Amino acid sequence: MNRRNALTTVALAGAAAIATTASVKADTAPESTLERIKKSGVLRVAVIVGQEPYFHKDLASGQWSGACIDMANDIASKLGAKVETLESTWGNQILDLQGGKVDLAFAVNPTPERSLVIDFSTPILVHAFTVITKKGFAKPQTWAEINKPEVKIAVDIGSTHELIARRYCPKATILGFKNRDEAILAVATGRADCNVSLAVLSVSTLKKNPNLGELAIPRPLLTLPTNMGIRAESDRRYKDFLSAWADYNRTLGQTREWMLKGFDAVGLAPDDIPPEVQF
Image (tube, rainbow, N blue to C red; front, top):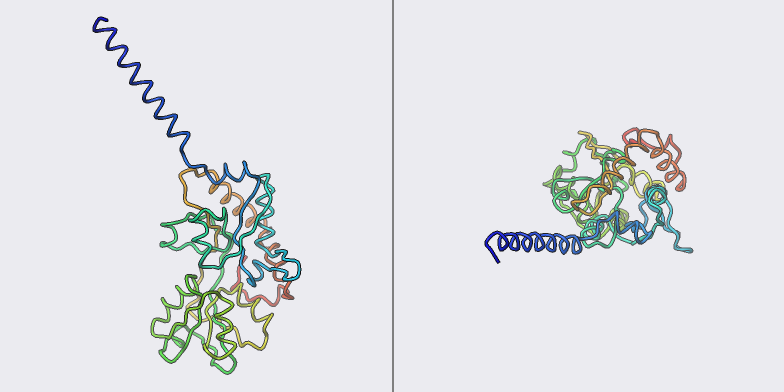
């Protein structure tokens, strides 16, 4: 074999090796969320008990309803899939996304810390943080009024409710609970003076439990967008699809209709909802 033929053989061998390596990488590349949904025909969604108007579980039938369930069904229909639910909590649904247990988490507030581990769509809506006070507790007009060591604030661990309480009431006694239901129970039983929650959840809670206490919207008014959370991945198609879906339905007013339907299911009319609860 002359030198030219030898070089040609080496070059061909190198090209074949590169092609083989590329093929192996392609074969072993992780399946994207969008590919998995289309292949399986299933959209796995995190759901949370007792979080109306977002989620409602019928204890007799086990069926889920609520604004986010309507949204999930609409998204699934666009992908040729059906919805499969996984019961979670506000804190755990981030872990469920990371662990690949779900494909979608609703009503996730985007924070810098969360953006390091998951990704987000554009906002579904924007709403304010509120305080539910126990009976007899002075209704705060500002966050400073409950930023005192003697004030006990109940929050669900790992939620943005906890984040806001610790950020704006660092001097208060913060009581952390596994989920929001336990935090609300602490207020109902007098173990805590108040609970920090998003307005959209607070108004539903007080409608179901009118003797619990009162709703306060302290100043400064604190708002955050609520988005859909998804697994972080290099393939942007799923994220771009959800962002387009969120923008489209928010602009057309469909998101508002889903939210009002969720509120109506717990007996709340549009006039019952504070103006700080935006859709």
